Length: 182
Image 1: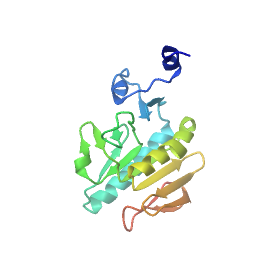
Image 2: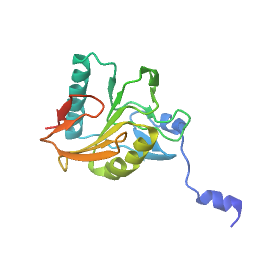
Image 3: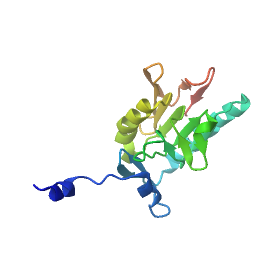
Image 4: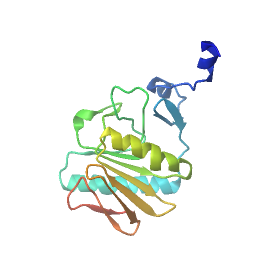
């Protein structure tokens, strides 16, 4: 097989430029040069997103914290030198304001929450888990409405715990803060 035919067999590698070239209203994430299109979120998804964002923001405000709670859609560039990965986590908590500008977060957020939709389970449970762990995210929550479970990864302590929606889930990046998803 000659070089021309070999190149035709390879998958196209996309960059952040391709994400910005998408038609208005079309949302996608880019992971290691592959585009993953995102379906519109459900009512359950958006209700959980707003409830969790509000609880976290209220805690930070009450305690005069400096962290920012940023719900999707908001760009997260885990590594500023990587133009092949662009994510929009459901909720990002960023405690270093130097990482933020009007276009997104440059570097790993301190805490990320992903709310599982039926079509994105493998992304949240495997692909994003690996990306977040290796990029320096301190804490990662997978909120699964179908299972009514929250899986919490505290990467600094190398722990993983599961909680039901009815339980109070301790937040590892803050002392004395827990959230009931119910």
